[in-house]
Image (cartoon, rainbow, N blue to C red; front, side, top):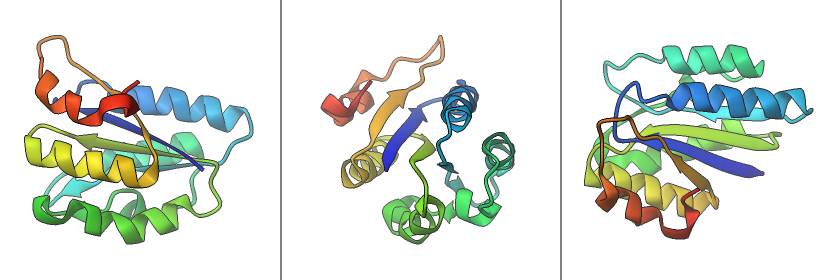
Amino acid sequence: MKVLMVLSVDRRAGKTAISAAIGRCLVDSGKKVGFMRPIFSGDSNEDAAFMGNILGSPDSLQAMSPEITPDNIAGHFEASIKQVAADKDALIVEGMVNDTGLAEAFRQIAATLGARVILVESYQSAHPDRYQLFGARLM
């Protein structure tokens, strides 16, 4: 299974638009695609609902959008990844890397999953220090 992470330091930078375009192309070519976007307490999981619809996913919103805490991101991912990735050809994971701790957590997840990473940059942002963590995985 191929894993693609679509990350940004900014909210509303276009992560879901990019994920939807890539995911829909894969579905249209006959691939089964899973989606995950972890949320923090109080965040909305409307992007996961949208992506579930775009991908025709049978996965629950709770699995696609697990609630996480900043101190244990990787731990919260394990159970959800197993459920969402089951029988899939590809998995798209969205996330925020708006601080160094989150960037490091997602770097570890990317390394564990063998993921490629797309970093979406809004016009006004520039955080190369966080992006450098991804090294050769960066697309």
